[in-house]
Image (tube, rainbow, N blue to C red; front, side, top):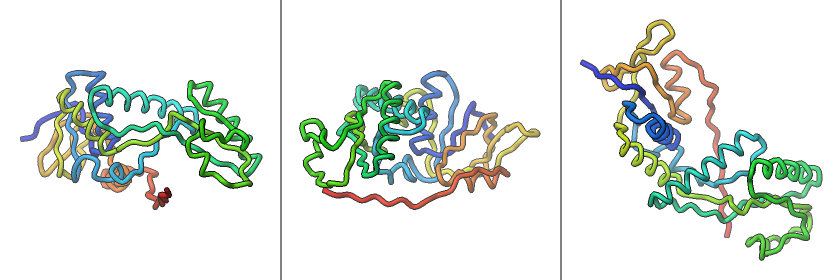
Amino acid sequence: MGDSRDVVIVGAGIAGVSIGEHLLRYEPGLSILLIDAEHVGAGSTSRSLAAFRHQWSVPAHVAFSRYSGEEYERLVALGYRLEFRRNGYLFLYTDRDRFRHASDRAARQREQGIVVDAIGPEGLDPGRIPCASWIEDSHIVGVTWGPRDGFLDPLAVAQAYLDEARRRGLEYRPGVLPGSLTKNGNAITGITLAGDRIATERVVLAAGIWSASIALEWGLALPILSAKRYIYHSR
């Protein structure tokens, strides 16, 4: 005999736990089950350097970053230790056309309420940009500087969202793989978990790079591809 949920979320990375917390924050009383094959943040979330910036080309990305920053500050105010540091984000340009385009982007970002400046090489003042004293490249024609950008601990953010969601009633089951979906035509009617059927009309797939393979088992095609990224740390 199975049971039922309003929503089942597959994947307890930062996306899945955030979705669960937001649903319960704005729709209290929902019955939500969150599952993960391992544990919270075990996938890409815990492997991210988690650099945080507002300097994006697409306005929607800028808006998402602004909202995210407000969310991180909210979680810090609630007492969560996220190591959220706004120590700035600096882009360097050696091509004048690219710097001109970057300056235009910075202007659009400021229209969205973002603190960001386009600065010529003469403005690389350590009093304004702390890392400026380390820059010694005569080819630099300009920079964009976002002093409220920075970095944080992504696993701590995921855990904070999970704690908040569980406080609001979310049920969390680690170590559970998603099974098949049951449907009535194109409508979802349930999902199988460890041989048990959960009746639900809403399944959220938030399994990161594993979402494509899970979707394929459900007869769906998602254009998600994994790509290796390299991070270099200097000091």
